[in-house]
Image (cartoon, rainbow, N blue to C red):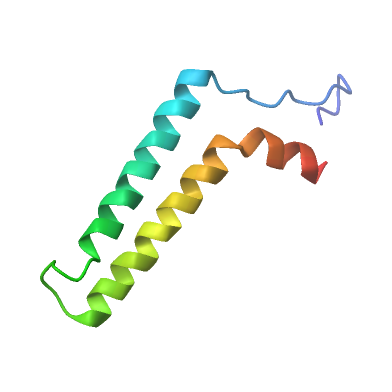
Length: 76
């Protein structure tokens, strides 16, 4: 809040293409990480489980990125 004017700062609204590109990028990285965690890929079991966790985290981040405006409204 600005002390002199008394006005609250406006929230930054993202355009549809920004949300789409950001969400798709996070989703693609998550899908790739999940693919790398499959049984036919080289690596130890621990490394594959870590990659699966990373993949799921990126997919969740993609979902949150797409629905960020709804989450902000719920927090108010």
